[in-house]
Length: 54
Image (cartoon, rainbow, N blue to C red; front, side, top):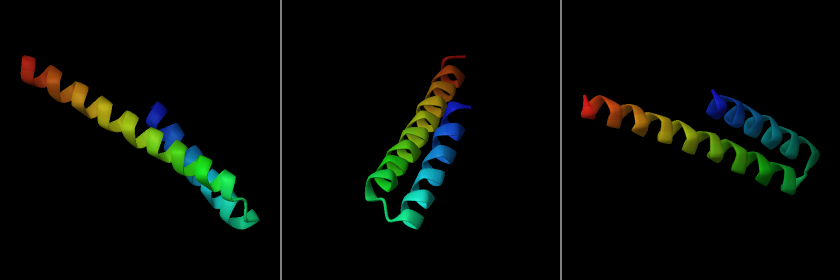
């Protein structure tokens, strides 16, 4: 669930940064979105490992 929140928060920050011309906010949004993507990949890998062990 945390990955979805980070991705959404990142997209919102990026949009706000675009609208206001705030490059720092846009970069923060990109980092948050990437953080959410990484969390999702880690979660998928954990599930795959658990499935392979059984």
